[in-house]
Image 1: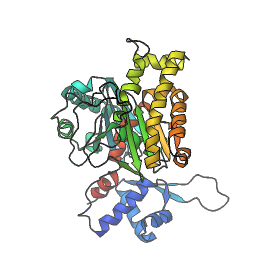
Image 2: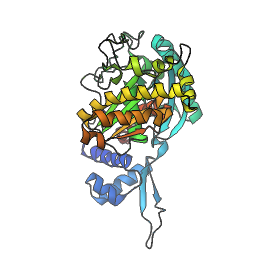
Image 3: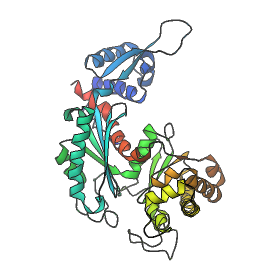
Image 4: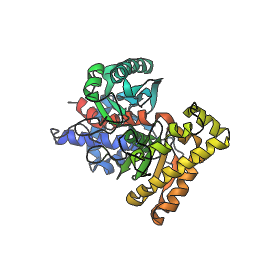
Length: 390
């Protein structure tokens, strides 16, 4: 992830930054371990610790793990309330806002249904109100917030911030979400595709922790895919990587909202699967039926899972991920959708890659994207904290 510019940092500032980065990545670390992580001498690390403790950025505590003898080591960690981040998740049909502290703990969040696709300005106005309410409930002052991460259900060009809205977000053409939200909130804003942030959320806080090659599949209003490769989010040259729902699976299939014909979304998205059971069947009704054991609902979801698994088998063969985390609406059905995905991947991917990949349900649930949005900002926190002392 791109962070704050450090090109103007002097040598002392860079060393301080290295210490804070090490504490961010390894909370609860001794001074000896910090010296190893940073390559700095123990006296230098100790001097920075004293400086950062006086500034309220770092605190120390004794390790309470059982010991046979000797004094327990003193461990260092960043003060949780030294900085905060706001996450804003704008799905096709919902808005969620969350406030997290420096450790990534969720302090407050709020959700509401809204037609995001056709109401960009109304959605951003409402986001401003929800941010204010969540900050108040979390007892966080606005000037303590280092930034806002924003998830949007469309491809995003990370360099320019451009939203590829055509066929995906019908009323967002020409809208500049970063500038508009920054003006509304008076805070720095970073924008990313929602599936990419779902991947980041699960990677940092959920079922993808400790895995450097990860795919996150979001099965909600559409079918999205976020990738973490080499421990870093991957969006491709212009933010289009991961549009799994728009992979073509049928030459003569129905025309998709993207303008192509026969896309995976037209056969396996939750809303399409729900309509197989009747024109008035909603996604919540589909999920309730499936979890109660209704044969029609479980069959429809299993068949969708098989199609999704076939598409993912190509990904497994090409990228050889260690783990695929499945989130979104259909993931709530557990093995009803996961088992067909596993079976299809095992059948259609190259055997070594298919045997190596784990397919698991996400642990963050409906908050994966908003927590990933907050994590996007928290990744910049070491630079922000380091600059506070100048």
